[in-house]
Image 1: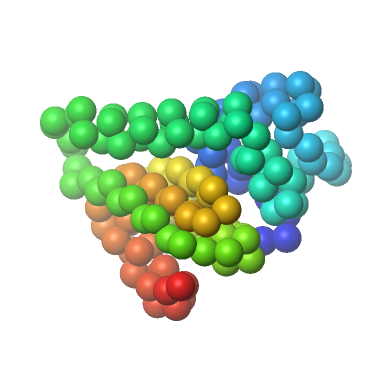
Image 2: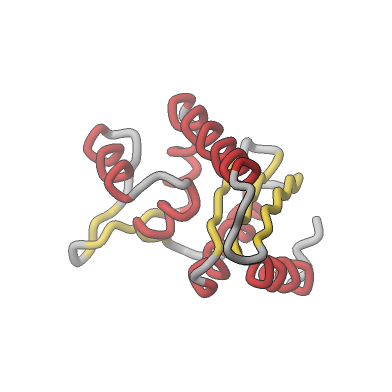
Length: 147
């Protein structure tokens, strides 16, 4: 589990652009700490942000668009995968899962990550090069996150 997430991590988790997240910071929807010109967010701050009804709806739309875009594109340049995981979990397990997937997707470079947690279910959507998605899933199961 990560202790703090940066703006790019949060953009990756939510699917919102860093510009949109900065607007949410300015509007007070998102709270964080700015250190050395860089925003940092605790898991609690992210959880509070994601629980807001306005944000939840935006995340739902983002998640739907990821899957729809995958299904709509009939010709792809390479083998692609789109995986949706719904994992029942507690807030502590949710923090571990979000950190794990955020780190793995950051290292892959060719996988898109979308994430939502509703206090009972953690939904993770991975989309990208099939081999990279498969590698992340293999590491997930090897890490014994089975809940």
